[in-house]
Length: 305
Image 1 (cartoon, rainbow, N blue to C red):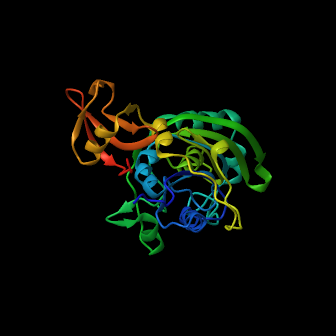
Image 2 (cartoon, rainbow, N blue to C red):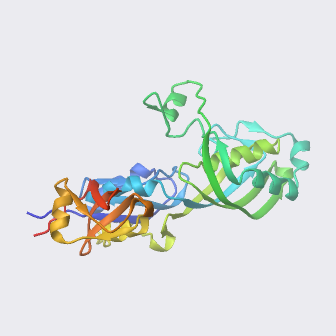
Image 3 (cartoon, rainbow, N blue to C red):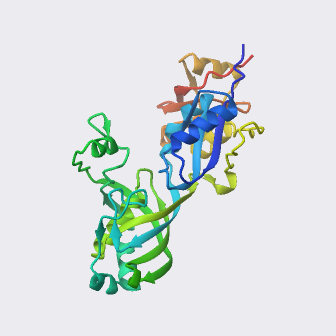
């Protein structure tokens, strides 16, 4: 018997004030299924593109998590918060003379220094696990947590607008950031402020792109979940945005789902991972081995009847 539960990927525009888990809970109710996950957390204050997998779509989330992302953000120079963003109150403030000394050139130089391959220390209240426990949980329990720096790629860090309100104790800088998976934009805000000697934190964050998916692809989650849920993006369509594709016949598809290998004309030199498709169905994510052999890594157990 075929599985009639929802299978695919949904791109939504996360509203402000809702956790990513809260979005998952709403999608479960909207689509009437328990099997829902998301590809990369957005903090409660953040809005924008959140990609969710339903049913077998959850198997693709690990691949989606690793793609690059784009953000629009506002960095507030002049103060810092314990969370490096506006989800907590400022507890460190710049000296007025230091804030008055900040210039457009100085901000540009600070942004330039944070562009390219950089070693970034994530915020202590991030979801990174330390000895099996989330870092933010350890901080809330009163621990002093120091996370290790990690290499991230900031391919674009553009200043869009700068608003000087020095008499009010801050300078707001609107930016656009293209970055690798694992980048913390609030850490960029913190580090920009530190480099200028005035502290910094994030006051607004909107994710506009996750890999090939942008705000144009995103749906708004209604307050009334009795409204008809939109169609999901098929697994095959999503897989095509992530990996090269190999088309097989039903016999080869069955063999792959049974853990057997099948032949292909691809070489490992062309990339060692492919999305295997039969018709318009995703069969598996497979490894390309020497001699043009495919071996399934993640099978999607489709009905070929």
